Image (cartoon, rainbow, N blue to C red; front, side):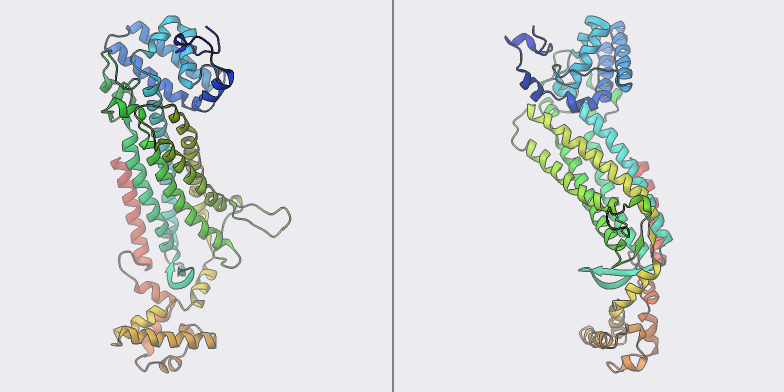
Length: 467
């Protein structure tokens, strides 16, 4: 048989595979990343085969020892990957046979590359999700800690990017935290569907060997074996679901990035990012560019593209496995890498944000952000809301003309619009009074922010313990 024909299936063919086709169809250039998971699955498979009597204990031990040595070669960078052998599975199996002889060829008994790769990807994704969980937890903890420290720091809240009402910086950070909490729930939920074992489905119909899939599932830490062999080898819903989680997460990080970019600008001047998260300009020496949030914002589109790629990959596939599925790995790998990098960047950066409290306070004071408080004050005094709205509108117009905030007007100036206004109005026109008045669950009052931060930490701890 020609060396160009893969020894695992070449018996059917009368001529070797064209060199270009061999390279075009090979996946080893990227799926070698699954080597650790492939060896992990093979060790479990061999252990199960020995337990049911398909392999002897001596054959099992020789296979496991050989696979362990191969893992060492790969870790040390000594393993030689072969394109003619197509993929990670056949490269490892061929090396195993070189090492231990014919016993190495028995490893593939009762399985196919179809259920093997499906298992490898799920093992990889489970490990990736656990790493992402750790970084997401670190980010949320840092964000909650910063929110608690800045519970009293007043800043303008915006709608339509226009100053609306005063809030606290801590309250704003906890809004970010709520986004991430939902992302975390989606991640945990995705892991449940990742943790189902395809191994034992073989090519598509199962196997005639007396395998015990529950044993293999237990050895690999899967919650249960997949119920249907056709679906087991062809399902990539878990990859699409992960990419969907990643897209929503990156959308949230992108929104946060946009605000960080705005806040670091001279026009806002709300925060300072440490130099280690920024870069300079090659021509403008005064520049300090927020490159980390800008790049996270840009990588969002990359992840969106991977989600669409995976959806399109699966949209017209008949059961069961098709070669199309080889195309799932590169977008999935890149999604994992991008998510981990972005989370690490944010987890390092967010706790180091330095708020410019005076700038934030002044921005909130300039925008008539307590106008709603004045309207609420009038309503409590018996004025109909629509009339109160008109009175406050006239007061703001006067303030714009006189270049005065509502809190800077005299009582007499305010009373020209309504004689219902009394001296106690200044209790609600200050920024401090405005935020303190919103003293209910979900509100921006500093005490509520601190209480919300405490609840968020407890919920995060409880949620992780429950997984």
